[in-house]
Length: 151
Picture 1 (tube, rainbow, N blue to C red):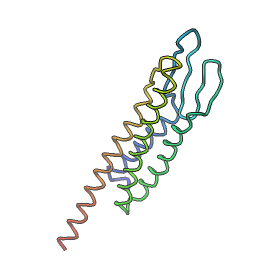
Picture 2 (cartoon, rainbow, N blue to C red):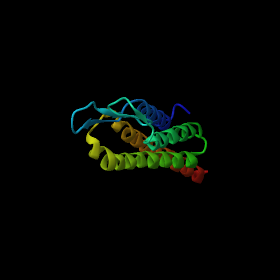
Picture 3 (cartoon, rainbow, N blue to C red):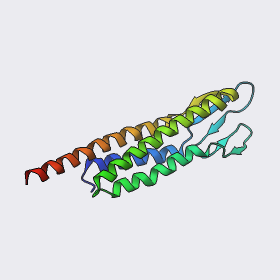
């Protein structure tokens, strides 16, 4: 299991997804005087110290991706399922970006100037790792099928 490069890609993607869950993804500098607000995946901390859970859908996208990635790592005997799980993880992470863009355009641009943190790149890095893992899984499946034909 661990000797396959796809497993390493899947573990790396999972690590970047968990890191994105932990770090702030956006800070909003208010238009007037005031303290910047910070957006995490689960909570939004405004300048006054108030906490809002209104953007918990960002957290949900990443949280659903983590068990799917673990299932993909441990379903190494079923390569078709593994490839499908990688595809679903990529779709969920791209949906995370769509919802983040929706929130930035509709809410944070009105409140002030949004400044993205570096952790916004982590889901994109995870998508790249999932894509590389999926390509490797499909290549393994083709190799196994070609060996079956020779016999």
